[in-house]
Structure formats: C-alpha cells, structure tokens
Image (cartoon, rainbow, N blue to C red; front, side, top):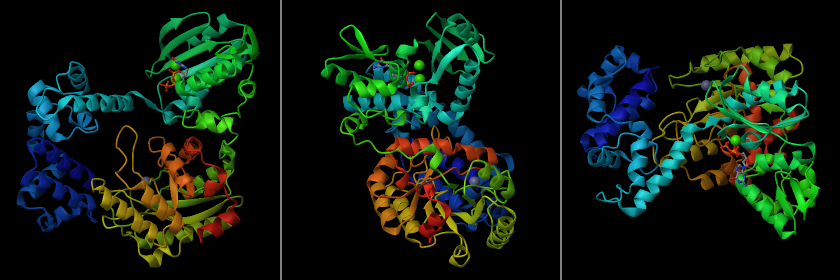
Amino acid sequence: MKNTKVAAILNRIADLLEMDGVDFRTKAYRRAAHTVEFLSQDIEDVRDEGKLEELPGIGKSISRKIEEILDTGTLQYYENLKKEFPLDFEALAAVEGLGPRTIKLLYNKLGIKNLQDLERAAKRHKIRRLPGMGYKKEHQILENLKIAKKGTDRILLGQILPLAEDIKEEIEKLDVSRVEIAGSIRRMQETIGDIDLLVVTDKPKQVMDYFTSMNLVDDVITRGSLKSSVRLKNGVQVDLRLFKESSFGSALLYFTGSKETNVMMRRIAIRKGMKLNEYGVYRGEKQVAGKTEEEVFRKLGMQYIEPELRENRGEIEASINDELPELVKYSEIHGDLQMHTNWSDGSDSILKMAQTADKLGYEYMAVTDHTGRLKIANAMAEDRIKKQIKEINRLNQELDGITVLRGVEVNVDSRGKLDVAHDVLKNLDVVVAAVHSGFRQDREKLTARILSAMENEDVNIIAHPTGRKIHYRRAYELDLEGIFETSRDTGTFLEVNSQPNRLDLKDTNIRRAVYAGCKLMINTDAHSANQLSNMKLGVATARRGWAESKDIINTLPLKKFEKVLN
Ligand code: DGT
Ligand code: CA
Ligand code: CA
Ligand code: ZN
C-alpha cells in the first residue's frame, strides 16, 4: 500500500541530491524509486519477509531508509536534506525548464526560494547575469512562470460549476427575466478565474441587495447600480452585471468571450461597416441587433458559434465559411464505460452505480474495477474478477432498463504488458488499459508502453492517455501523433476522462485525435455514484475539441456499440 509514498520520497531525495549534480547517489535513489514504484508486491510485505535487499537496486543503505519510512512515515535523512535547501522545490520544479541544477544555482546566487522570489529576480533582470543563463533563458523562465502560476490560481471547472449554477438558481427566484452564467464557465474551460453573471431585471436594487448579502459572500468588492462584485467565502470572485433585454444577446456574447474571440468578432463587424460592443450591433447610431446572440451572429453573416468553441482557434473562419462542426450533444451519451465500485476502490455497489446510471438515461455502462498485481486501490486478483463477472450476470437478470457490461481497468506495466492474463480478459466485454506507474520514464519508453497496450487485442480503451492531473502532474511526454495513428489502425479507443482534475485527453489533443481519425469514448471514471454526473465535463471537453457524435463511440445505441467492441 505504501509503495507510492516510498517511491515518492526516494525520488525527492534524488531531486535534492541532483542539485549538486548527477552522481552515483542520485542514480541509485532513482533506480530504487523505480523498483518500488513498479513492485508487484506490497513493499511492507517484502520488508516483513526480510527481502528488501533482494530487490533490484536496493542495497543495505537504501533498504534501511525504506524501513524508516515504513516505521515512521518519514525519513530523517530526507528531512535534513530539505533543511539544507529550505526552498519550495515542488513549486519551482513545476516551472518548465527549471531542473534541480538551475534551482540550486538560483538559490545559491540569488537566494530564490519560491515563485515570488523567482518572478522578482527575473523582472529585475538578475537571472540573465548568472553563468549559463542569459537573456533568452530569463525570458523563458518568466513566460513559463506565468503558466505555472496560472495553473495554481485557477479553480477547476468541476468545483465551481455546481456553485455557479446554485447562485444562478437563487437569483432566478427574484424578479428577473434572464440570468445567465457567462465567461470561461460558459465556455466550459477546464479551469476558471471567476464567476460572471448577467441579469435582466426591472428591480435592480432587489437583485443587488440579494447578491451582495448572500450567505456565501465574504466580502463585497464593489457595489454599483449596474455591476457588483463579491468575494465568496471560498475565495472565488463573482461579477454580476445588469443589462437591458434589448442588449442581452450582445452582452452575453461579449462577457462569454474569450477576449480573443471578441476582438475577432469586432473586426468582422467593422469590415461590414458596423460596430459591435456589449450593447449591440450598430450601423451608425442605430442598433440593428443585440437581443439574442443568434441575431448578432446572423447580422454579421456568421453561423452561430457554440460557447465551447469560442477560443479563437479557427471557429470564426469556420463560422463565416459555414464549416463549423456539429458538436456532440450533452444528451447524446448512451453509456459510461469506466467506473469503479466497492469491489476495488470505489465507494458504492454495482447495483447503486447501475441504478444511478439508469436514472441518467443510459442504456449501458461498464464496471471497470482495478485489477492485477499493483498493490493500489484494492485491486482484484483473477479469482475475484471471475466472481465479479458472475455477480454482474446475476444483476443483469434483475435489472431492466440498463445493461451492465463486464469490464476491468488493467495496468500497463513498465514494458507495456498487462497485469491480467489473456484467458481472463477474453471473458470480459470491456478492457480499459491505463498507465498508473513509472511516469518518469522517457518519451520513447512511455510511448512504446501505450503503443504495445493498444496492439494487444484484448484492450478496447486507453484510459486517461496522457496521465496529466491539473495542478498536480504534467502530461507525460508522449509521441501523440504516433499514438493517434496506432489508435486508428488498431481500433483502440482513446478516452476522454471526465474527472474534474483529469479531463484527459484535453480539448486541444481531442481535436488532433479527431483530425487523425481516432475514435474516442467519454467516461467518468467515477469512484462513487454521484461522480457519474461528471460526464458533462467530459462532453464539454470533447466539444471544446471540436468532436462530433460520430467521433464518440458511446453515443452509439447498445446494439451498435456491442458490434464496435468486438
Ligand atoms: P477567467 O475568468 O479568467 O476564467 O476568464 P474569462 O474569459 O471569464 O474572463 P473575464 O472574467 O476576465 O471576462 C469575461 C469575459 O469578458 C471575457 O471572456 C471576455 C470579456 N472581456 C473582459 N475583458 C475584456 C477586454 O479587455 N477585451 C475584450 N475584448 N473582452 C473582454
Ligand atoms: Ca470569468
Ligand atoms: Ca469576470
Ligand atoms: Zn480507481
């Protein structure tokens, strides 16, 4: 169970040692970390059997350290190393291009300990004067720093969407004729900066009074007759703006953004001898459109652009040329093909998951609990997989309305092999394969692992293909074009994982995959029944990736879906 934790500490020691340069010690710790990470047994069991030193790359000294971690939860040697370099290594290392050596240089020469120090030094041009740095590197650090900082300031869409919808519903109970959520939330961007609300009302005072005194509000930032901003107790800012009915469409368009899309739209209006702003489309002084978004687009000679596409990624041109995709709809999903139950690390029973999926209107779902040797997530060994198949068969006789498919989520090991035998897999309807360890392998190795999983005939789906976790772990370095090609050639589906912090593949990669001719599946990877509703985040991501229903296999009805699986 503690394998991941032990491996993480060993890797961090290697990081810290590497600040003095790569030597035999850093290599030894990396190797040991790799061994522990890929270990098929529980590290505690190995230790109890007194066999730590028999593991590859683990000698007397590291084995003692592993014991200390297992006994005390930490390691004095590691704590001391951290004291030697009292800096926020994690945050600094999250800046692309900053490795242990550079971090040490920056600490020793400029005393840089965290992102704020780094930003100050870069802006004062102190970094370029350091040996081996120069103007270009300094500039790059500043750019990458922005990305790293943006990453942590912003909030996951999945965390904020329900809250924004609640606020919207409460305001709808007042004397209002329209309430809409605008901004990045309406575009369903994966992370968001704040909540933007637009309201039409005859009772502006009533609305502003309510808005500035909601229970959720911590602090009123500004209160005006047409715009107020508050900060909620969870730190999120909410802007509320009032508009007239006759301007609501153009206001919604403007405050939905993105900024870049707005700029392009305004140019088109000008080219047509008109003017576009948040109050309407104008010819001279006369408002010629503005009540609805549709009307504004029409007036500008454009096809309506769905909010999820408004990122200035070619949608304006496509709209003018009548070439926008017909995006997959939120209501078109017929089944969810990755979820976990209390047979592994999920919290609900198969029955509860099935009943909930049924309520969501699905025709089918697959139970894909963790399997194999990896000692995480209460994985199922082969005998339990067989038992579970029986249980699902029994349930299917009981249930009507939804079909439960028999599936597993298998691990792709360090050489691209699966951790469950073909003889077991061949009896299942759905085999989801995923990389769950060894993220530090290089691009070639990681790509090769995924390719060989795709070439395995038992595998139907590659789950969360790039492994990223928003705010936590960058995507693996992968040859995505190679993966797309093999996915297409082998008919292996790539997942759009709907977990709020995964959304993997992400929008821009979905677009590349669709362009390459791959077929995708949008799954929730739910670990409880209420997480099944995350599906809309995955669909939103697919829409942001310009996917149509023909690109998404689980838009198929069961009969056709089963044919495609075989
Ligand atoms: P966020 O809040 O950082 O997740 O992103 P947005 O897109 O919601 O940005 P926000 O809240 O600053 O503004 C909402 C929309 O208002 C934005 O998408 C486009 C529009 N907008 C705001 N400021 C400007 C601006 O300076 N120029 C233009 N053209 N549009 C703007
Ligand atoms: Ca916003
Ligand atoms: Ca805003
Ligand atoms: Zn799981």
